[in-house]
Amino acid sequence: MFRATLQFQDGGSFELDVPEGRTLVEAALEAEAPLRSDCMSGTCGSCVGRLLRGEVTRDPMDQSIVSEDEAAAGIYPTCLTRLGSDARFELDYPLDPCPSPPTRMRAELVSSERVATTVSRLVMRVDDPDAFRFQPGQYLRLRPPGLRVARAYSIASSPASLPLVELLIRHVPGGQVSGWLDGDAAIPGATMTLQGPLGGFALDDRTGRAVFVVGGTGLAPAMAMIRAHAGRLPMLLCFGCTRPEELFLHDELRALEAATPGLEVRVALMEGASGTIRAGTAVALLAGDPVAGSSYHLCGPPAMVDAARAALRAEGVGPERIRAERFAVGG
Ligand SMILES: Cc1cc2nc3c(=O)[nH]c(=O)nc-3n(C[C@H](O)[C@H](O)[C@H](O)COP(=O)(O)OP(=O)(O)OC[C@H]3O[C@@H](n4cnc5c(N)ncnc54)[C@H](O)[C@@H]3O)c2cc1C
Ligand code: FES
Image (tube, rainbow, N blue to C red; front, side, top):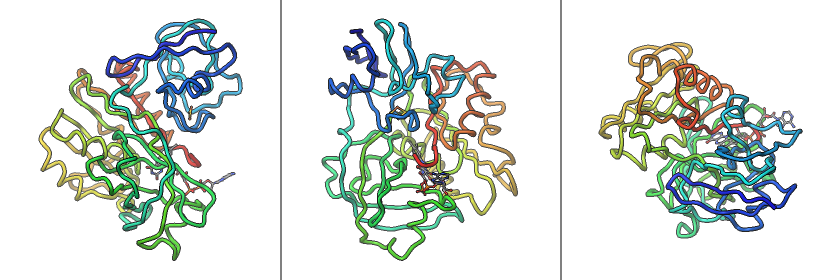
């Protein structure tokens, strides 16, 4: 038996006994420890933690979402990690306040609106908002009526908007859940099944300035954090899309920027940039931005997140100042 000390963002800690051969998440589930998890297969990123001390082994079959650079920086998917000694892990979210435990619940579809050729905004009203306490940055699993599959979507609204919950959903060619949104059943009043809240992506306010580098619907968790923490600390949002017809919520973001002290919004397009919209990627929007005193929140497709991470590391940003959520398809 080994002992893992889980150290949380707010300074709280939890001592977890981990039997030899068991993963940290397996031990945490048995002990009802506050270590978050979801997929148990290394794809969702909910359970990642930074190893501060101790010896661990990763599953040899591990094809997890954690990149080589993250692994080199001591970041582990704890659902695939076993201990070889007592160990200490740092987690990117606070112990207190704790979100409610993930539960299955129902929600009524309020509206589904195409906000770009490839993106819909979904607003739902959850049945029992008192039982659903989430932290900005978390996601839920959505299963539309008549489908057997559920998919992961980050919550774009702030907890203050409950019982309403907003999602930004990219239409994936051949996709089951995003494809459902195009059908006749996607009408107000449809009953959706939700599971959540899930995930450990949370605002890092320890450096005093929060930077978000997001691609496409990776905007969703950044919106939740910006909406919930507006005016509390300086924030920079770098938002990238591919083409003008795929850009969404641009006017809304400009209005949010004007109404929020300390918020700067930069938008980039790979093709067809004009006016205040710059040419290039969300990562390129960071050029010339001082890296000292900032924490970074990366979100979007895995390739975009890895590129942003590599660019920041090349600028000398330490791994402890970078947090990431990767939108793996089929997540
Ligand atoms: C933590 C997390 C948060 C996320 N948040 C968001 C969000 O806020 N917004 C968002 O838009 N996305 C988000 N995603 C990504 C989202 O979950 C996926 O895009 C979603 O799963 C796509 O679902 P779908 O049912 O529409 O497509 P799927 O049915 O999953 O299909 C996706 C694609 O894969 C192909 N495919 C499916 N099965 C197979 C197979 N067996 N072999 C080969 N190809 C296959 C399909 O043809 C299609 O092209 C998130 C992902 C994670 C992990
Ligand atoms: S629970 Fe470990 S990556 Fe999903």
